[in-house]
Length: 294
Image (tube, rainbow, N blue to C red; front, side, top):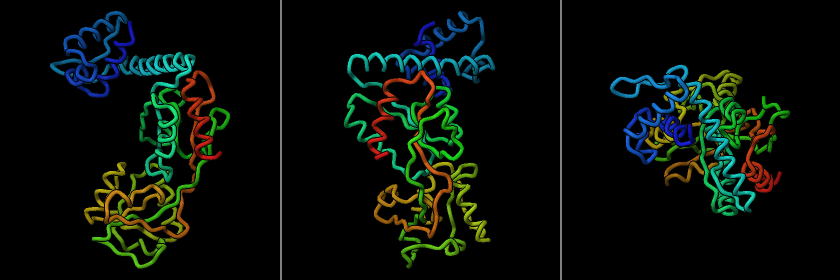
């Protein structure tokens, strides 16, 4: 067994296609298939459901895949640690982030990139629960999420500014005379909202319910991009975080604050306390304290 075989397995999970997985790994499809079969023989397990094409992973394959991700993360961490011992900070920082947080991740990543030019970044959008789970599994290095239910016995936390809310609209289709909008003013406007099940959406729902209002939700999505598309098309307005620069995406987007509107849960940057974590993770978290003046 070698690291490349594990990479091939993970690539197959990402692409769900033998040919695309091979292209992603810069090898031929027969080579990829042969190396995965070799791994199956070594483990004495069938990992993949096959017919004429990739049909998915077996139950055993799913369990081995989870370990493969952990081993690969540890391998990358070892390489980064070795580089740190040579006085370099290299590798890939994996940042999990809840969608529609008011904290622009570039406020963290750009200074890190300027200070450590060899550093690369992966940003993954997911729920707070998913971020905590993947931090525990060492599949993320840092997480930017809501911290109201985070156990600080297991995580170091940098508390960030709360997420204040505004209404995003396209001035070609909607107009607001006031400089600050009341929740009551939004009750008769078609709205696009983040899908249910996230802190952000829960705070919005609570605000409407507390005022006895039922919003006209015309579209729900777990994609910020799709909500912005809906706004620019004139289908709706959207309740979005302030100070994220969304209104700068084109010349006709505008955002104005909603009175006394914020996500109820505080936002924070998390790092797992339990080792192993890489020197890269530790150094970036230390720099984040300086960047956010915490």
